[in-house]
Amino acid sequence: MSRLLFLALLAVSFMAPAFAQDDDKIACYAYPKTTESYKKKLWDGYEISLGPARNAAETDGGDCTATIYNGAGKVVFRTTGFGVIFDEEHTGMDFDGDGKGEVVFATDEAGGAHCCWVYNVVSLVPKPHKLFDLGGGDFVKDKDGKMLIWQRIGGTTGYTSEVARPYAEQVFRVREGKLVDVTPEFCGKLFSAGNEDYEVWSRTLTPENIKKLQAAKRLGPAGDVDVEDIVSALLSRAEQRVFCRQYDQALADLDLWPDGSRDEMKDNFAESIKTYSPEFAARLASAPLSK
Image (cartoon, rainbow, N blue to C red; front, side, top):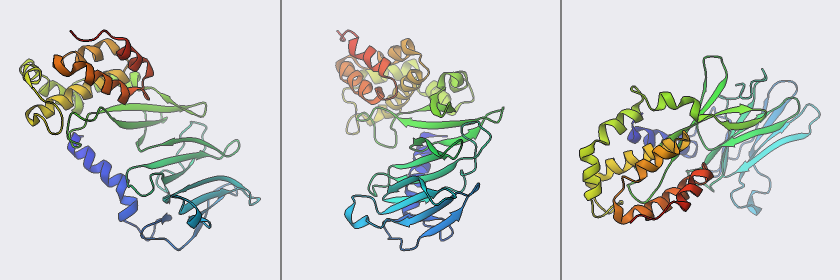
């Protein structure tokens, strides 16, 4: 998927709950304000209740709530936010490989900023518990029928416009009830012909374009727009190499940056990657300064 198309779809996927409200959807929104509450039976005696929170006026961004009750009427899970959606499309999918389907909600945790809808994935066996929260992603099954979660992660900001922001892929499985990063299993595919990102990197990061980048005097949204695609491709490839734990190759990519602002860029890159790869962020922090 091209970066521009991805960003457009990402914006639609996160903003749609706030604007494209479906009368048939079990959902609650702070704006336009939802007044109706919903109930829906699940399986094994479980039931959900979703609608405006009773104490919404006393909370900040807690206008809507969704609750799972067991057969005895006891609350076993609750999520609260500016908006909450019962995700009927993904509910019933088996995320953790135990042969039982999960319950999925989407919760707006950003106070209506339309940026941060989070999937809440809840298992009901052997007793109800939250498997994980995830800020977006594609849920697909591998050849063995096991669930994979592909998530596209935004990279370093400040050197491109938002449309050209660097991105890279992370891949997860659920093992022993936890999300496990298995991206390296898929790096052969990510760095091979036929993968669209790889094709963009190969097409863009030519020796001629690297020289053009190194000759640029200003980099950033207000800087040299002629090299924005090169900047985006280089930082995206470096980010993907970090996720693939190809640290030497990632450093080699970053060292193609113009000398004058390379150390500053590495600091920014380390800051953007430290949540996902503290090892690489620490390696950047200990690297010798450019001469």
